[in-house]
Amino acid sequence: MQRIRLRYTKRGRLRFTSHRDFQRAFERALRRAEVPMAYSAGFTPHPKVSYANAAPTGTGSEAEYLEIALTEARDPEQLRVLLDASLPAGLDIVDAVEAHTSGLADRLTASVWELRLDGVDPADARRAVEAFNAAETVEVQRRTKNGMRTFDARSAVVSLESTETHGSPADRPTDQPCAILRLVVRHVTPAVRPDDVLSGLRAVADLAPPVPAAVTRLAQGLFDEETGTVTDPLAPDREAAATAPHKAAATAAATAPA
Image 1 (cartoon, rainbow, N blue to C red):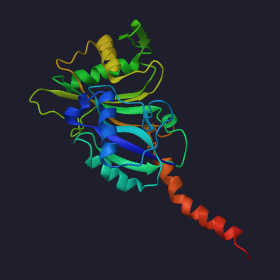
Image 2 (image 1 turned 90 degrees about the horizontal axis):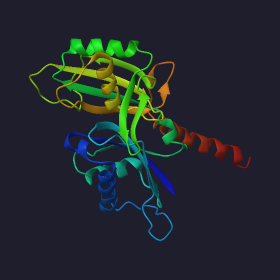
Image 3 (image 1 turned 90 degrees about the vertical axis):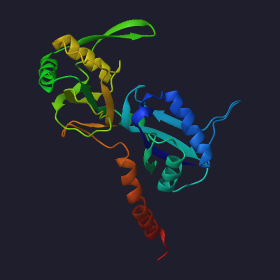
Image 4 (image 1 turned 120 degrees about the horizontal axis):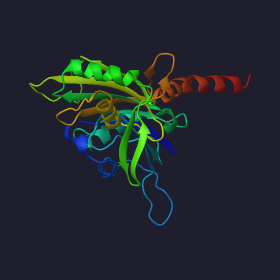
């Protein structure tokens, strides 16, 4: 059995697809591409696909991850091209590696988000960000299936800044003022989402965008404490794949008869 890990995107209108919608589209793509999938046992077998930390419905993403199990070996890049061609534009398979390590989900411990606030003056956004960062705690409320829940949105936020950078996948043309925020947040329980941070900005600085924010996840992976960056979760698999041929050659040489 071979395991392949994929990174995919949710862009444009496809940002509004739910996780279940993506699952259905991806399983159709697997059939169209004739991928030799491994199936679960039991009365209703289903393809062995593991999804990791999907973005909320309505948010775009450049960094969604999943893993599939195959019964026959395939070249990861060729498989990526076939699957990408079988999915609608906006749901794009942009990276594929063979799994050589364990624990992909364990390497998704933080996310980088971009929040585009149309109609918000950048100066007002900077003041709100300063107030949020200065606060020790920022309590917000979110409705859950068990009712309203209050929690601290500040503790999970590694960094929040106002930036002048434009040109992200979340861009929407507008003649109105526009503030762009960059957010790095740890994956904790309960999860702190970009909309919770927006609620926190409203609580500490009365910042209320006139239209819903355009939110895009730019990256997710392990948070590097030394550099303050979120690292590529597929990098360990790429590194293991690069060293595997050398290890095999060394083993063969060591066991060869004199």
